[in-house]
Image (cartoon, rainbow, N blue to C red; front, side, top):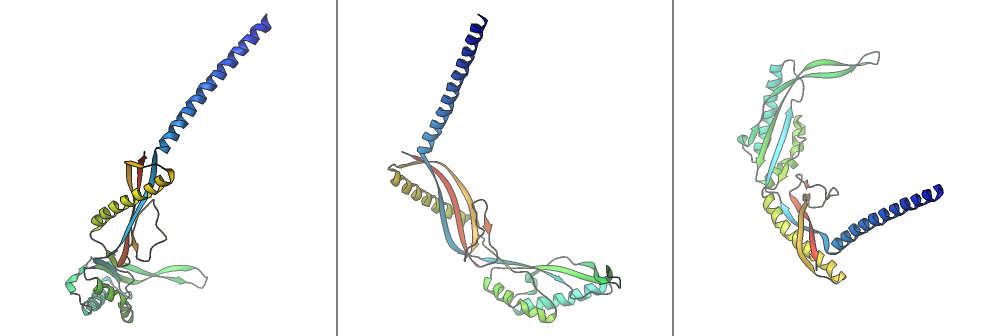
Length: 252
């Protein structure tokens, strides 16, 4: 009798587990079927639009440090004024006014040199002071900025160097972006129609849309263009504007 009771109990537990398994399988299959039907009733595509654009303004920030150190802060500032005057003359010779240079604040720093002693150890020894000042040139005359930048090497002859490059900017970025979004949306719809033709269905209404990356790239293109982030090239005058959108359409 005891063995029969144990057997009946075991069968009951087995039946319960089996029933739960069927229920769980049904739930999983139902969810999978629902997802399958949803995915077959819609298509997600990316749309791309791009066009050539040109920079319409330039901003050039230059930092000047005295070409040598001085014995005192006063002497360092005097030297800075002389060399800044040479820098201003360079820009005036290229068609700018002295007032076009927006001057920043002056500052001075102690100057140290690394010296190796007889034991081979390196120490920093105080030599004097250097003075620094930055200035900004902004202009809508792109050609004039470009010519000045090409001639920047001439300052090397005076012991002064211009290491910074101008930034070529586009002022109507929002207007450009909006026009590209419209074109990219049309491109996405065309791609969706191509998918639909192959599948023998029709493209329905738009379910969702999102803008991806917005790029301002050099005219020659860029290897660093990813859907996960935009880019804004400021080093060239001629550029390519590009927008990517992702759109989900219903399929009828």
